[in-house]
Image 1 (cartoon, rainbow, N blue to C red):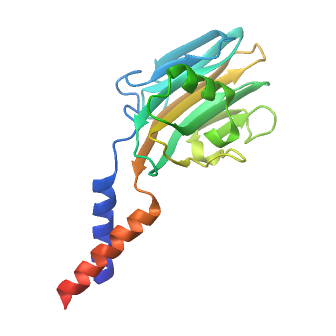
Image 2 (tube, rainbow, N blue to C red; image 1 turned 30 degrees about the vertical axis):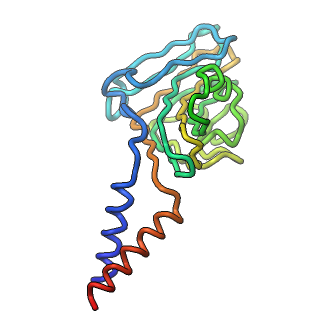
Length: 216
């Protein structure tokens, strides 16, 4: 019984300590809270809210035939320095013979200019990528139905968990240089901000000590 009480108390602590994370991750409010971005060389790219998935609506990025580019959406939210942020979600797509799809998670200092954030998204350092598929053998196939994005981890990436510097960025990216029509749909994107594990453990131990004292 004591273990149950301790676990319940710890869960309450974590829940009450968590910061609000991503907003409108299910796209029920359209593109609200999401910001469109595109690399300067992009052409023929489209952003849309569609109703083709299992839990519509969803966000769909696509490139017209003959187009090429790297683009998508991103969202920034506050998370205290040193806290932990995670990301998960579902996606489906077709990236053709020379394309890529990514869900990115990284942190920047508060006040970082939008242009700097977009450049980090466009550059796409491995450590800033949570999940990725590409046409050169990474997490095949290149055309896939709805699945958890976590099934496609980025080698050398962050696995969908980072330590915050104050602002957290979640980004969706579709890219291609093939000239083929390609697309990426995403839905139910979740990202939250919680105290780092040592703090959670310390709080849990403190609660445990209180319960033991009361029992005595």
